[in-house]
Image (cartoon, rainbow, N blue to C red; front, top):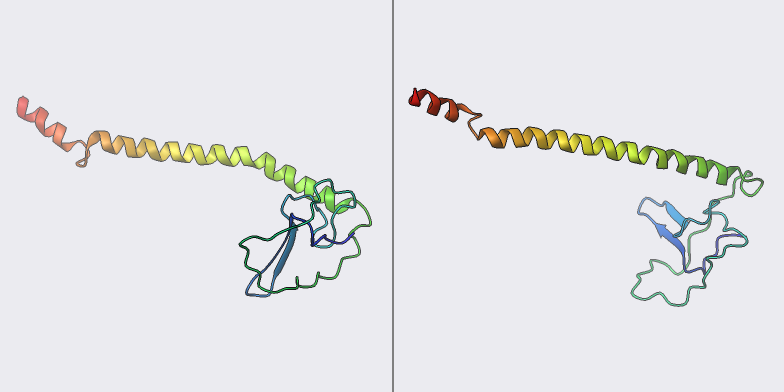
Length: 130
């Protein structure tokens, strides 16, 4: 079944360079932009487009479908594998960002404790007392 343009979750967006994105907003069409799953349980007919600005009345034509689309589950399997890679890397990347933030905070905190002069004012006060 081709992409259901009358579905509430179908989105088509054209860019100034001529590229067009056709997708399911729920990410339930692994073979987008060519087709939706035949038995998509999320399909809801689009009833009203309130406050939307449409550039044209006609969605640009869908690009020619590759021979591999629909022939097997290879596209879905490939997307699942890519999603697994991203999901695995996410926590590691977040941990690296947090370590970097903590490192920067530690350096900034040290500078604040010493003051703008880098501790020279404290050393001068100690010398005066002696």
